[in-house]
Image 1: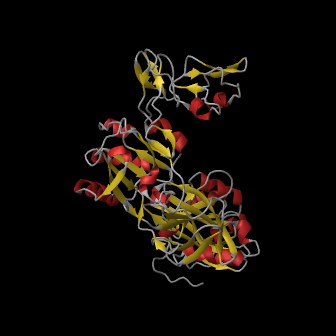
Image 2 (image 1 turned 135 degrees about the horizontal axis):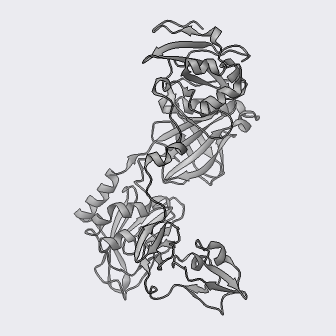
Image 3 (image 1 turned 45 degrees about the horizontal axis):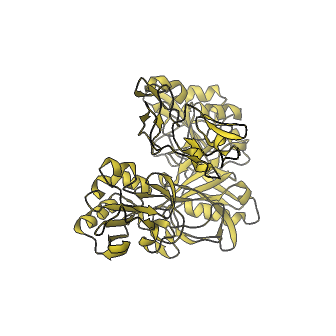
Length: 503
């Protein structure tokens, strides 16, 4: 790594960004230490362009290909990720491979098999209020020789929300933007997750606010897999229903991308190599360029003189932007993504394929004299490659996780000592389910959980105008554990299969 001392102002940005902390500022100038792996982090953040990569790698340095950065690691030193060290000319992992036995204590136990499923569900069980009374139904059962107890109640939860996942690469609005039903705020847009847009609907502050009833109705409808119309402030109009494709501004999303543009290149580079001289996979997060991408180089792709208009992340991987164009970017004409075509490297007749990560749109171009691009029909090989991408995509759909806080006074209907129930749930001694469906219990205080609404019987969620969401909750544990944590043994009844339950 080289520093132009005339340009360097000693601002320290490079020091902050260096993963290995080998950059120092002395006498107000940057100095690069011997352990530099040429990861380029300091170069990317330097506001004055004072840092550059050397033309040749240092003697004895090994090229690491474990990620797109491609560090050159010197003898005795680490790569930027600090996972690999050059030891005697061999790259070795700094942490040994672990068996499950090595981590079992950290992972913790699962609930024993006999309590993983409730004896009965809380669907249709009813609620006791105030909760100082025992839960509506406390039943015992012998399962595989183990005495098991299930306690059920349909609990009203004000501390609840939905995390809604919408499979589409089309932009729906800025992160943090309000989500509306009519003019009522019911949630907000949250961070994207691997090609899906995420909405947070509800939460205690909205449920207890002036529009709480609308919020509760929206949560309830979505959780019960009913259609809902939403508007993102400053963004798209959405028609969503859990289990079905989303409709964004009147257009139904068909496919969820197989991966970002870089991942798509990694998956299909061996096919692309025989289709065109250059391939560009357009994506709003990471657009890829085959001739520079590690996967492209691995399969023998040659330099083409193509440079993209987007900002480079690492070779062959470019940060995209957001818009209504191809791959969720601002690119409306696929030729626009090419910022430069160096005809000293490119050649007349060179073929360039541009495709989306879903394979829904693709175009082929041929380079003419003076660097002009002429669109031509997809060759049969290119068409098959694009179809292969499309066949690898999953159908776009809407899904949702219901998130609730099952603590509060509802625990008093289960046990006499609520804190003991909380501790039993976190220790996997008592197993929490929702309508019979498994949940993930969040770590930390309280009984906060998440459940996939598609694993809960349709119509199992309801609302009360307090407002709150009525959620069917079951606690299942061994009888001896229920007694130990102070359960309401006096209210327990043996369960008889198919016995009608009066409410």
